[in-house]
Image 1 (cartoon, rainbow, N blue to C red):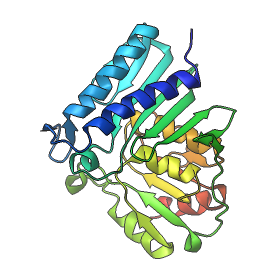
Image 2 (image 1 turned 90 degrees about the vertical axis):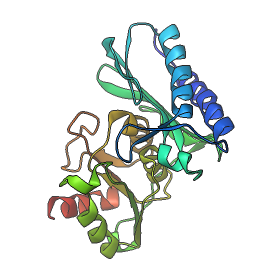
Image 3 (image 1 turned 30 degrees about the horizontal axis):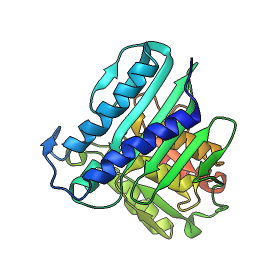
Image 4 (image 1 turned 60 degrees about the vertical axis):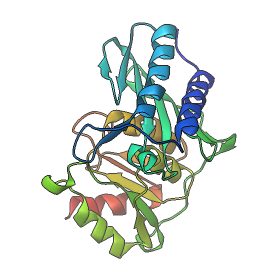
Length: 258
């Protein structure tokens, strides 16, 4: 048995309700790294999601941000981020979401990204399009970097890694209408799919950050690759470049030529 898109959407809504209910409360913040936070709400959302998936689909393989890898069949893989945008959430900044994706046979087939404060549900099924609250999504028609608006993110260890992304940020800031940093890779990808941004790149991510949003992007007509142009943006070493077809090659050229 395999899940349906409706099943995954319901999971995202229920986990989103947990995030929404805890949003304006004081949080118990712990640190996985110097600036890598986790709150009690991350754990509550994840406990709900893992409980549902493990009950309904025992034996499936799960990648989840807080619990790591739960071993199962590699034919059926879940990518779960119970709270993408934890730093925003901990500081009461209203940009965060739940991200859930399911892959079978080595390809992501279902995805849902839910922003509970805006009640925006981004969903996609491979080969059947991407939707936001029932409206079909289509990427923008941008063809020039100079007229495009981009979004990116930075790694948690930006102070001591050569992949800090700052040089790219400056470069694209000078070549485009601007570069935003929202703090949620899953929403960044969905916003490209919705035509709100024209392109997104990031150099160091995790599979649960990009699996669902990447599928939404693809099904909305974006080209989604690694930053070196390869088709695999989920396996390590991980990076992602998602853009409307009109500017993907231009962004790729800039990323390849520092």
